[in-house]
Image (cartoon, rainbow, N blue to C red; front, side, top):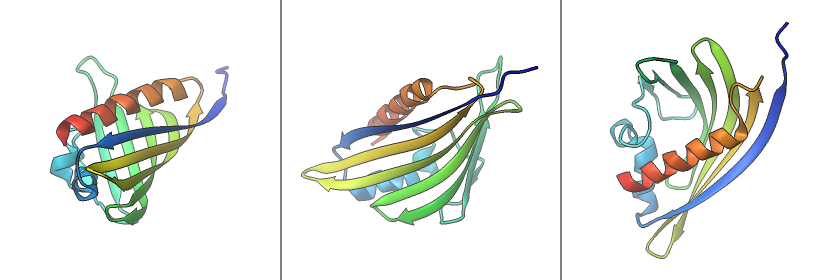
Length: 143
């Protein structure tokens, strides 16, 4: 019998980018811009209730699937979405993410908060937080 367990965690990552809130928001809301720093979406419906879906991974596998639903969008201020992350047919986690965009002198402070439920050791909060840091670094380079 497979041991089943759940780990809950919240992490917050802050970045300040030398770009306007409009430009940072565009990097999240435009599929071409988002594809430069995040996986290219197969489905991209950037609206409340809309879905974002992408699947991919290394040639030798596994296939990772990101399946999100937008819960709240306030242009240039806040994006909230829930998502699942799967590895092949295994559900790794379910999360709610809040992205806050705060104007600063000469740029934008981004506050990324993720509240996750991680299943059976397939993923951990530490690995997810590391991956999110890498992702937000890539966002900064794309800006």
